[in-house]
Amino acid sequence: MKKLLTLLMFNLMLAFSYAQTPVRLVMHHHLGTNDFALGTAASNNLGNAFNLSALKYYVTKFTIVHNGGQLMTVPDDVVALVTVNGASTTIELGSFSVTNIEGIRFHIGVHTPVNHEDPSLLPSNNPLAPQSPSMHWGWASGYRFILLEGMAGASLNQGLELHGLGDANYFETIVLAQSVNENGGESIHIDADYEKGLKDINVSGGLVVHGELAEAADLIANFRDHVYSATLGASIGETTTEGGMSIYPNPSHGSFTVAFAGVEGKLVINDVSGKMVHTEEILFGTTTKSLSLPEEGIYFVTLHTSQGTSTQQLVIK
Image 1 (spheres, rainbow, N blue to C red):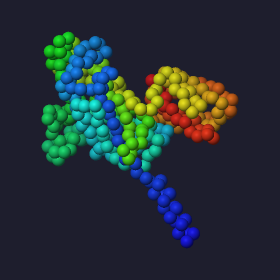
Image 2: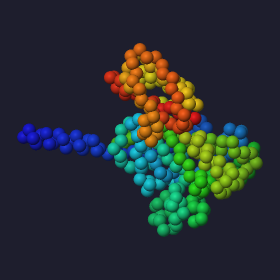
Image 3: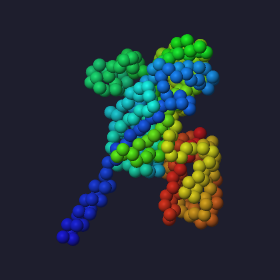
Image 4: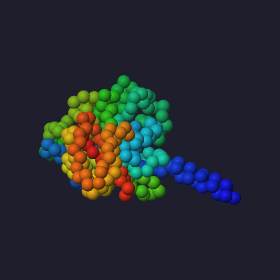
């Protein structure tokens, strides 16, 4: 009986260690401080007025960031065509053995070689199948990564069409956001502000650009660099403080300071691939450590103490 109980306990522990948790990405759509709605008047950072009658884009090749910068790759067949016509979009990523989700990485557009395959061969319910309006530019150029259409100009009477595509514009973005447990799984909530999609793009007289260059490429780059941010969890500001540890400035241009509040333990810094780039022991009474990282990117700074573990995100730019 004792052996049987031991075996049962072992099997339960094994099952728990391989437990699969459903993970989803929830995008909350905005135009500046307002919820997104088609036909709503908005303006970009140049003060150019516009409204949108259609906004669609592909999101592919997801990676879940968890447990201090570890990466969990989502299968490539998880493809989303985000049709922005309401408050939010939910993308089911699948079930994974992950805890402490810290962020999400994804690409805008469709990856090669899928980008150049025949969409007519796909079942109609596949996001990559023919769409209306069309999201495919032809076999040579592939899919439209982003389709943005509407009106612009002071009187909103000038045509606005930006269709961005091209393998060279297949960009990855990362959003650092702690997941929340809801609806039987983990949800990663992020905001998408589409005013920032037109950042520094002059649409004062209307604009029609289709292709891989100029403003069409700028649109995709803006999605990568400016559109997305965390909805829930700690945002990254000039100073972040948590668990007896503060980091400033954050973002940094290379040099930064980690301040401690009467703790001792081990300080570990990992990059987004999970590679450890720095580690050292922190003695009780240490107040600050001045550090630097030469490479631009996103890092995870973890302080291990007898009271627990605290991780913060650091941006070097």
